[in-house]
Length: 377
Image: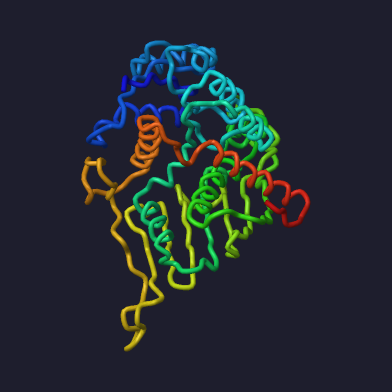
């Protein structure tokens, strides 16, 4: 298969993460599914586009995103822009049958997500969302345990994704907490990840009840700290959800969790066992086997730590199974999943349909917050 020619829209923090994954795929995986070439990069300003080109050797830089999505010399459109620009880029890439790798959330609203799905009727490309936390060895093992029915019937769960960057009232208002640019706040930015991961492990959600909090009514402008701007999105969201199987649990997304770094955690409890994980300790998956004997004096029953560490399946050969895992490594594995689907001509999961479903759940959470009632999904 000839090398895939990649165009990246957006080259801020997450654009660099994706570019890193493309450039270093061959180091982490002994047999990359397909070679890639970084061809084009687009940012809003000429100077940042040129800086990206100089940094990684893109063949061209532009401020016109259509020069990526409509370019016959581009095979993969990689979307790393603020949320408000996703839908238009997705629609253009779909129209031109590009393969699509899209950062979360999929769009800036559920309505936009539905428009994208409606446009995919005759689309022939491979598409995937960047829900990278599915691709941590510990969460890969958790999925295996669920499929092996280690948990039995899931009964209850609790999960959270916590950051602390907005706990300071003088923290500037960045685009991720602007309704105009992001469509939502902490729920969109962090909740999208944790909702996808739980849905991946537990199956479909059927109902949601939610409330949100905006910690400070105004914040300094990111562009001009002397100006204060009204905050119109949430800093904190708390959700109750029911699954199709009947399990009931809570999900929290917060940017005002003082003391937190990048803390995504979950616990799932079932009739036969339980699992728990914390991203701040990425090398371990804790599991509890309720079928183990509890006599004499506790027997063999108790929480056990599985050393998932860096144990990716073959052909992930570097740096080896015993070494500590990491955030960037999960992004490489997520991209590998996408490239493998292109190489094999198969469907990638999580695809845009999954991204749209998470969008529906998040917008239902906002509806619940507005109306004060449970919302059927």
